[in-house]
Image 1 (cartoon, rainbow, N blue to C red):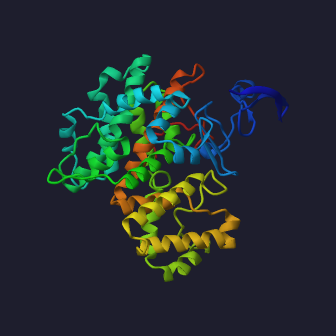
Image 2: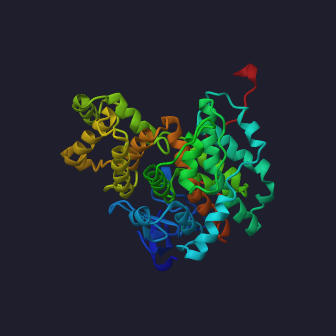
Image 3: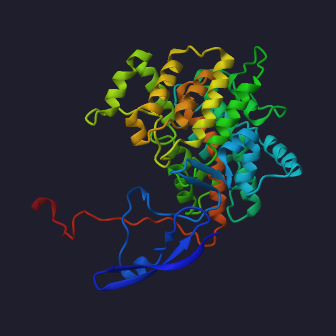
Length: 431
């Protein structure tokens, strides 16, 4: 909840406006400019909306200076250590950690919805075999409204609930089948006796010819990746979901819009870019060359996996992810992997080099998550689909909150127009 406090005074030309200020439960005060145009006839100009609150939300909070991420008030490191993904899903969806009884009811509800409509298997076969898995899951997610139209009425709270559970449950199957299709292997159906992360790994790596047993350390690392990526305030893809939802679009279409936005290399594709960079560097002895390039303002090269748009301190998710990376790589006995050696040395330099410290370029969650996913056996093309799988619950939670907000309106950003002024049409023969 926010509370109103003293007004802010804005003076320009011969006008003076009193704009209400609001205080959030955490974070800086906000100047409410909803009536700025109506009272003053002016807009604000804020490319990227970096100084604009687009909504009121009680789901996720980030303090970039402190390096803090809270889900419904709970620190991310506590949730990653003590909780598991489906419990976090419940927290994000309903606002509180579940009781034992609530959790025992919620987990089977999700598990029983993991199957996809059988006709969707034919839908996959319409894609080229070499299609990027992100393009497949974007298309399949959008198509869900054709298969599950009994849960597309956004004005019906029960249909919203059913759609939410369905998407959380089915996204691992959607992503795993996209992977299987891309490598030419048969689809593996979900198993209700496995937990959420283990089920996803089984659908990705099992084959009909032999038994596949999920290692609990790998499953735990996968579950942590899901938890750490579940929500992240009003980022680009979440804002896209809210913007699409503000038009009244069905929930499946809204999440498909979020997936499309996440595909961008500046957003969900960052962990893929970070691993590709480590492979490009190749060996530890080449690191000084790339460090010098990163410091050269005239060189377009950028160190991927360092720094963050919001965090000006160590990414809190990165600390947990680093621990998982050590566990997974230790289990697999690949501590001497050249890519890992490059990553460790690059991390050491970033934490000691004055240039990195001054610029606050700490390793972020993408730096470590790519290393873990690569060690587990995923190709880089699957990194962003896994991100989308994890973020689905955050998108849904934000969408549900927006739908229930009585003050929400259709998104309609303004612009600073710099084009031609009024011109009269000239016939083609006189131009």
